[in-house]
Amino acid sequence: MELPALRRHKKRIDLSQIAGRLSEGVALVNSTVEPRAMYWDDYNKGNLHSEGPLWIALGDSVTQGIGSSLPSTSYASLVLERLKQRTKQKWRLINLSMSGARFSDVINSQLPLLEDYQLKPKLITAIIGSNDIMWRRGTSAIAKDAEELMRVLPTGTYLSRISRSNGRGRRTAIADTFENLAPARDIKLFNAWNWPTAEGMWAQDKFHPNDDAHSYIADNLWSSLHATNFI
Image (cartoon, rainbow, N blue to C red; front, side):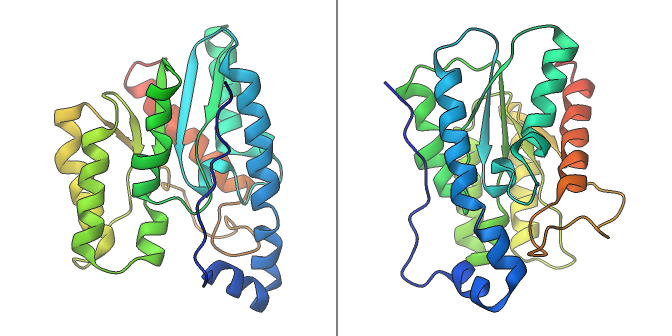
C-alpha cells in the first residue's frame, strides 16, 4: 500500500494563481509547486517500507522546500543529512507536507496517515500556520484550529513558533495558543524564523524562503534537537 499524493484542494478563485499572472517571480515559484510535490511523492515511496529511524515532517510549502533551488537545499534535506552523519544511522524521512496547507490540513489529512499506515516515527516536526495567517479571516476561528492542532499533535512533536505581532491579531493568537498548550503535551517549540536578517532571504516571489533561509531554518531546528538532547 502506497501513501496518497497529498494536495490541497484549490478553490475556484486561487489568489496565488492570480498573483502569478501579475508577477513573474510568483509565477516562477508557483511553477515549482507540483514538481516538488511529485518529488516527495516518489521519495516517500522509497522510505515507507525501508529500515532505519523514521522522521515524519508535517506542514506547508516551507517543508515542501518551495523557494529552495533544489530538494537537496531544502531545510528538510539538510537536517536529514545531519541526522545521518551525527548518529551514523540510516534515517528515513517521510514528508507529508503540502503546499498551501493550513492547520486543518495537518489535522485532517497529514496526521491520520500515521495511524492509517502504522508509521512509528522517532521524530515528528511541523512548520504550519503561515497560510492560516495569510489567507483566512477571523482570529477566533484560527485560534480554535490552532488549539485543535495542539490537542492532536503527538507528544514530543517539534513545532515551529509563529512570530508575534505588536497587536492582538492572528499571529499573536496563534503564538499564545502554542505557548500556553505546548507544556502539557510536551510539544517542543522552536523558531524556524529566527534569522539574523530578512535581507536577501526570500525567493523570487518575496514570500518563500530561499536557499540561505532554508539553511537557517535547518540550523534552528537542529539547535532545538540538540538543546532537548534528541541528538
